[in-house]
Amino acid sequence: MFSLKPGNSKSVRAPLSGRVIDVAMCLFLLGMLGLLYAYTFWKAHHGIGDTDTAFFLDVLENTWHLGLPTTSAVRAFLNVYPFILMDPDKFCAIDQTQFSTIPANILLGHANLIVYPLSALAQWLGAERVAAISTASAFVALPAISYLFLRRRNVPAFLCLFFSVIVCLHPAWRIATEGWIYFDRLFMPFALAFAFLMHDAFTNKEVMGRSRMILVVVIAAIGAMIHERGALLMLVVALGHAILYRSAPRRNVLFVLAVSAALMAYLAVYSVLQHNVDNAEVYKSFFDLPRFLNNVFRPGLVKLIAFNLPFILLAALFNWRAALIAGITIFPNVIVSIGGAEKDGWITHYHSFYFPFVIYAGAVGLTGLLAARRDQYDAGTQGRWPRSLAAVVMLSLIGAVVSFLNPYGPDLSWRTAFIKEGLWRPVNDLYVIDPKFSSNRYETDRADRLVAAIPAGASVTFMPPFNVWKLFRNHNSIQIFPVGTGVSEYLLVTFEKKADGGIMFDPVGVVGSPEGHLKARQCVTDKVWAAGYKPVMEINHYMLLRR
Image (cartoon, rainbow, N blue to C red):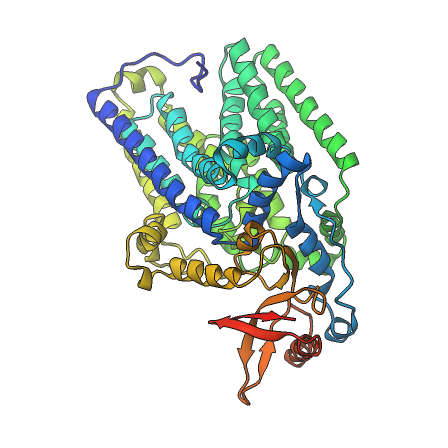
């Protein structure tokens, strides 16, 4: 059986208190897994969440039957993309009835090759169960792998548990568990295991065995299949260890360089095959200095740094190499921005890539703090308790930051709302409290009623963030408002009632003054009425119209 245990670890029988904490940790992880699965399955089944979740579920169902991971949702977003941030005058003049209906292949955007085995599983378990199981397991694996890594290094069990709980309090875990279900989430446990294995390969004096090498290859392969950015970050971590650590056995170095070469070849082949206009736009922003600086210095940058710096500083005090490697993995989130999601959009999947390496840095820093003289530490004599006390103080400071620092906004304000947050809140909302007081069940009921009024297979133009998965399960062809206005049979859009009793619809965002934005809203409203749409139903701020 494979293990993350380093080759030169001593086999020391854990004291009774340590074994009790081990059992408590197992129960904690099982409880978190159950809560996460319950919540994630509800979101997937009822379509609660964002359109990326719908992409994920749609391709899981389509890939097995079509042979390619295609989804009409991605095509809909490519169709509406030119309308986003468009000048109001151009927005009003452009023809909104001309668009492509060919489903888009997600592999042209990202190397989500993991979709093939997941799609096969979905034929057996169902797309929603696969999404819930894989996502819940990916999150729970982070504290589990961290705990195992630290325990294998004879770190006291209570410190291992403390560190694992802090991992769960970080907003990239605590808030992210309530967010998007997507491929990127699945990268996290493989990234963390890969980083720990690289650390072992270059800090232990023993040559890697065949089983350990096979484990590294399997983890690297799966991580690369999830996303090309994952392959790139694993390459950075592998080369970072090879360059910064000089005392590793030659065989270990050569093996890691071979894995790095394979990752580089994979990235080179994919970059030749990939044709993604959106990514091209991101690359162009690097050469537009005002745009680049605006992307970097978004308000959320302060929070991105504040929540991750304590882990990196802990590593920097005792292992600057691990701190440097982790810092490099955060860099893409600093220089790239899609509406600021990479900075403090914790519910989005853009925080899935660097977070495991931040955990790695903190865990390595903790082992560095405790590794005074290993023989004394293992024997429980001098040096153990002073260093354990120092570790408690440092972990308490990190825990205070991730727990009480406001995760949003440009300032470093503090709050205690985290006590009311966490998985217990949405699970309680979905499964326990009276449905009349459940915001999630209200959203579910609203979506059910609106979609039930749309015939299966009808063409629909909708306005996010409507529960688009409902439309996919109803086999509707979709476009995003205002694309398809005048062509789609149904419109499912948000609206606002004016003071004079009239109605104004909300299209995707446009650039310009408030007056210009008002002009865009008015012209698209006029086009809706001119196309002959009539209201069928309205619930809250959503209206369903039919031609």
